[in-house]
Amino acid sequence: GDRWAVLLWATGRAELPGHPRRTAWRWDGRPLEDQTASSAG
Image (cartoon, rainbow, N blue to C red):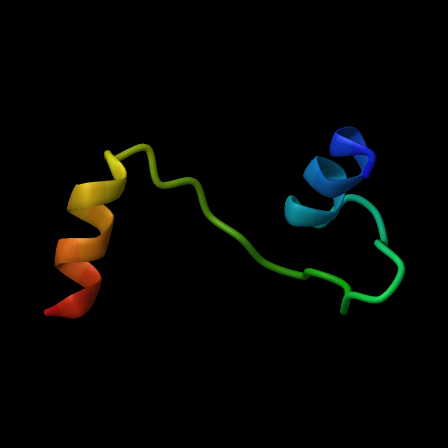
């Protein structure tokens, strides 16, 4: 697939066929291990 199209979709800036339009997102720069541990909690 087109990585730019996915990036634009993920940040709510474009539509991606077969996926609902994203209307909100937020950046989380923590390492993946930290994100997983805090969301399991």
